[in-house]
Length: 235
Image 1: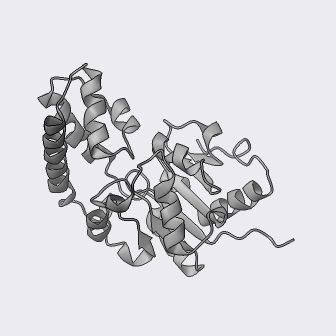
Image 2: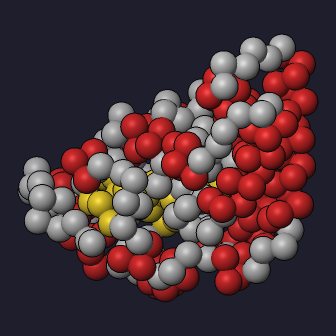
């Protein structure tokens, strides 16, 4: 029997590669303030990986505010313009801990890398951070028919990388993204204290704990049917 080999890693962008969650919070809170709706960092985390329009709908729902389609589109547009202004101020310092080393190690070992982000600003963020050369594909979310938690964006990434899903690891910090990965044959890694360890093959609290050696071990054990996470959850 041939040993399972990890051929590709598919990354979410915000909260996995880029330290942008606080920028999303500022942009989302501006929408909430306009609607006179309370908004928390916890709710902001729950909205990670969800489309712009759906985010506006969920913020409005917090205050039982009914919006016309036109108003939702207006708020979504304004939110994005505010977010774009914020990301233009980013530098390489906004790469999350340990990520640059992980990208370098994957490149050295010939592991393909792709980005499956719900953000239409993914290309801008990647260029601003100076890491585009590491990625073999960045999925164009505008061509995705169904957003996370539908698995379409992750399967599209695997297809663009020309790698079968069962040879991929996917890394996420959003609940919607984890649900999407778990509907595929990919091995799932969740980042952040807000996620449940039992929902993923590996749970880490920080990107600083994402080492290629560990990711490979998780992948191999998952392919053998071993529950790696029960023995390995980083604090």
